[in-house]
Image 1 (spheres, helix red, strand yellow):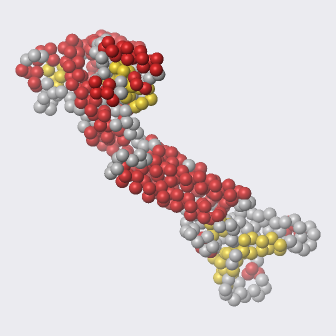
Image 2 (cartoon, helix red, strand yellow; image 1 turned 90 degrees about the vertical axis):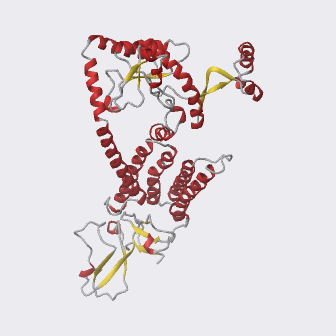
Image 3 (cartoon, helix red, strand yellow; image 1 turned 120 degrees about the horizontal axis):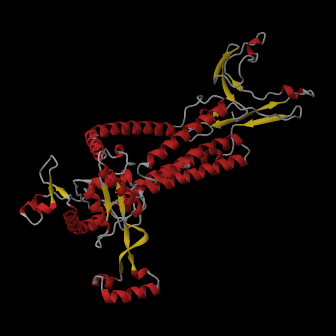
Length: 497
């Protein structure tokens, strides 16, 4: 069947008797009419309630038409298949003219189906397939400018969203407002998918949760509009899969947090005990307040202030600035001859604004060199501030005072902190820094332990005023405002020189 029609009444003033909604039923069985009571209308039921298959007057009937209809979301690739059509429960307005013939077609223009139900999925599939190709090329042919796989998938879903928007506008232009409402309604959730794929790290699951809520909410809202019951049709498969993924991630993360807090409970208890001990003495309280004021005064405590940048290239400066640099370089000669030949003239102590380091190899190469320089500064700072270092091979955390072992054989017993492991660096980049290399600031690191707050504040002053280093960031974990539950303890002051 390709459609059906209805003819309005013949008598004038019969417009009020025209149906606002009707069903078209079909049967292949013999019908037993008798008095006709078996075919009477359902006066005590809501007009939108009913099944697709019913039985009355001795025959089995199947619904084959309604004034408004749509395609099922899982209609496949056969729009003319009767099983692909979903008869929605929406009222219709018939012509006021009497004895007029109103037709209802079940074969609308092909593009109303294929653009939304076929081309959108093809765009998604192309994006995912090309992402596999891009991933393979990026790890085999590194000289090609191949985009990241997540960018390729995002492009595929962005194309699908554009096609869905086009399908909604075409349906609106064709007068199929209910189809336009469905297409554009589902688009509200779909436009979030490219954004989710572009962002990495912890924000991925937060945005996935937003998509899940929007997709299921819009699906239930569309179902309620079409069938007057939000549970008449199940939500989309993508919405349910993302919901399952979010539940699994939340459950696993909650379980991991519980285990982590249990593992760090002893450390946090020791920290809380130490903090309570420190706060028992007025001198310590004064030092804590002084430390807080110093950190605030320096103004380097912001979380997003510090980044790893490439050095400023003098050969990229404007001509007047470049000439000024060359005149200074002629006197100081701070550039390696190889860089002179290559034309790469770096300005000492200056970074290129907006040009963050994007290579983990570069960070580790720089850290290997800076670690040698940092070791010498660490020793001097500890010597001048009565600092302690940990002893090698002692699991109990034994300490030695640097001024006592400096220049003696016992100096070999000091345990120097090693460079951050690659696995930990990659884990931190992915989980906390959204794969932004410039946010990784502690590949080369070390620690000095102090006997009291006075020595710690003195060391801070020594480091800040050291002409050989420039402090870029301070993290004060001895502040009264610091919540030890965030790191399971970890008291101290962190400095990025």
